[in-house]
Amino acid sequence: MHMVELKGVSKAFGDVDAVSNVDLTIREGEFVTLLGPSGSGKTTLLNLIAGMATPSAGRIEIRGRDVTHSSASERDLGMVFQNYALMPHMSVFENIAFPLRVRRLSRQEIERKVNDVLDLVQLPQIKDRKPRELSGGQQQRVALARCIVYNPALILLDEPLGALDKKLREYMQLEIRRVHAELGITMLNVTHDQDEALTMSDRIVLMNQGRIEQQDTPEQLYFRPKSVFAADFIGTANLVECEVSAVNGDRVRVTGAAGAFEVTEVEADVAVGDRVTSVIRPENVEVRAAGDDRESTGSDNPWIEAVVKDSLIVGGVVRHYLTIAGDVPVVAQQANSRSRLLLSHGDRVSLRWAQNDCRIIAC
Image (cartoon, rainbow, N blue to C red; front, side):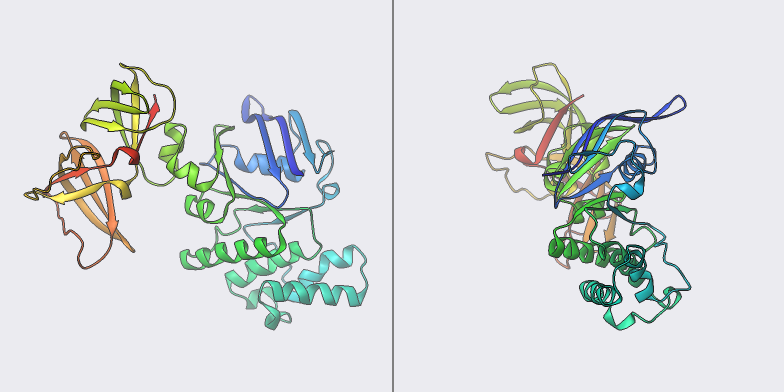
């Protein structure tokens, strides 16, 4: 069953189209993330689904019921906010119990449900504390528990991890995924954090200027972007402009600043003379020191001369910032280890990428 279905939904604020003719389906039990830069329309779209805004055009359905003009209270939704919105004068137990008391459940039923959900978020020991006595991660889990306890059809998460530090944010990503897996509840998340979207989502809906740029699984969106915007926004990508010089079945030969090389990952039909953009992820760029005379294998592209501009350690990886053909930037990435290739500014190196590790997109 479709949990949410948007048909031709638009929202204008004066002369500005915040959301423009969006069609979107969210399946029951799915974890979907709306991802995009500021002003892309992702938060407006969440507000339209939540009932906090009314579309200028189009139709919104939840479980097959038209809710386009229904209030938020009529949509059977739960929402987790970035600032948690916990009531400071209430204990953790009372905060979680509040939506059940509004629904007039019995005292015994409230106690059972609250204790069950506290076990689910692994916080039974803090039920008598006030929100000010909790860490950020604990407050976030309490906010999630308050949302889960009355079993809504859909949970909306509005930048829920934005206020947390990096390590706690990564932990909470896994916790929310665990709760989602255990309950099988439908969740719609909004974020501008690519890592969060890639880690948590069954499907990512990438927004750009009020429209859906691409919607796909995290793996497909990362490795098979359908536009230059998608390739550039998700992760880090080397974007090299080229011209198609030959087409042989599923193998395309391109020529540009990186010289001539072949590609087997092509987004759309191309012909000789077409201008295209080659997309190569940094982890797929192989680098060797100058003077290394290893031969290329028959299936690999030729080596390209490059100059090192900088080399930075980023946690468990090292990123090498290089230039080819004088001024074309390329980023290469390798695992951080004591045996790694040590490079510094001004070093001359060679780099290459495999034919199936490069994707070309029509300009």
